[in-house]
Length: 203
Image (cartoon, rainbow, N blue to C red; front, side, top):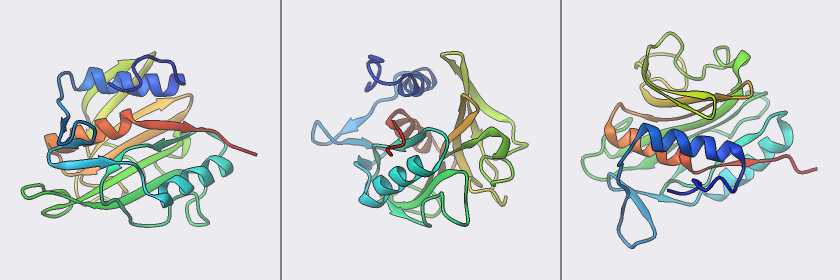
């Protein structure tokens, strides 16, 4: 699995540990020996708006941004990537992506995914995560804990109806989620979380 050598930042090693512990033996199919495919959904490099959004967030925010380096192919950003004037103090991106026959996310053959980071003290007020929901699983790594949540439908939170993986590092809560409580979505979320890259501010 990528990033397990811990030759990169501790942040990435911790995230990789979450994936390995939470999903032992989770196979990643590849149609061409190089492109990962999970449940018929191809994972690809992020589009330009994600890359630029991460750079902007890293410049504006006072904490380290975790930017995805692999996302479902066909990723179509739903709303402007935070921070903006409407969502200050947080990093978040949300998007739709196409799914194969038989996949059900927010609708048949349509997926919805969120990636976010925010100080723990602001988590609930920002409408992220699914407060009050019992954990659907827990793992520990490098002195930190990571938890699965099967967020219920109908809430006002961004992750309503999503399968969410959430963890905290140095007072910052990080989350990756996908709509629908399926095995495929757990594997997608784990893969995206494993391939987050810490982006530092560049003056």
